[in-house]
Picture 1 (tube, rainbow, N blue to C red):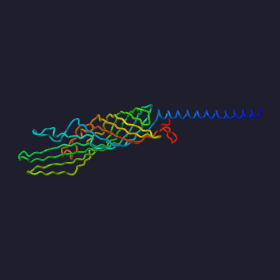
Picture 2: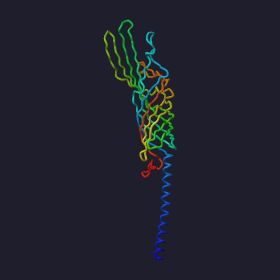
Picture 3: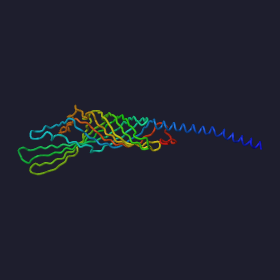
Length: 294
C-alpha cells in the first residue's frame, strides 16, 4: 500500500513539473503576440497604388484677348466662358504612408491627366449691307499632364475594420505636357441666306503656354477597409490651385492660336480627385498575421 501511494505521488509530481513550463511558454507566446499586434496597429508603414478620375475647374484671374471690341460691341462679349468640372481626367498614384496612433503622414506622387474647356463667340457685321453678318463659335479643350507631389496628413475617425478619415495637405505640381483642341463652328448670313459650317478641329501643342509648375492646398476625406493584411482605400480630395498656371511671357506666342483670336487668360486650376487603391503593410507582413487579430 505504501509502495502504491509513493508511486502515485511521484507520477503527480512529474506531471506538475511537466505542465508548469508549458503553461509559462504559452503565456509568454500570448504576450509576444499581443505586443506584436499592438505594434502593428499603432505604428505602421504602408505602401501601395491608387488610381481614379478627376474633374477640373479653371478660374480666370485676369482676362486677355487678341481682338479689340468696336464702339458698338460690348467688350464682355470677347470674354471666354469657362465650363467647370465637365470633362473627366485620370490619375495614377504611388502612396507611401507612415501611420502612428490614428495619424498618418503620407507622400503620394501622382501622374495626373486633366481636361477643362472654355468657349467664346465672335460676330462680324457688314455695316454697308444690312443683314450680312458672320457668327463664329470657338469651343476649346485644354488637356494638361502634371506630376503632382503632395504631402498629406490624415486622421482616422474610428479604429474599426472600416475606418473613415479626414485629410489635408499641400501639393506642388510640375507640368509634363499640354495640348489645345479648338473646334470652330459658324453661321454665315451673307447674301440673305443662312449657311452653317464647321471646320476640322485644330490641335496644337500648348506646353509653352503654361508655367512649368504651380502649387496649391488640398483637403478631403475617405475610408480605409482592412482586409486581412492589406488595406483598401477610397478617398476624395479637393485641390485648390494657389498660383497662376499661365505663362504670361508666351501668352501670344502661338501664331495658330492668335490667328483664331485666342489668348490665354491668367487663371488658377482646381480639381476634384477621386481615387481607389490597395495598400500593403511593410512591418510584420506575413500570412500568419492579420491586422485585426485582436
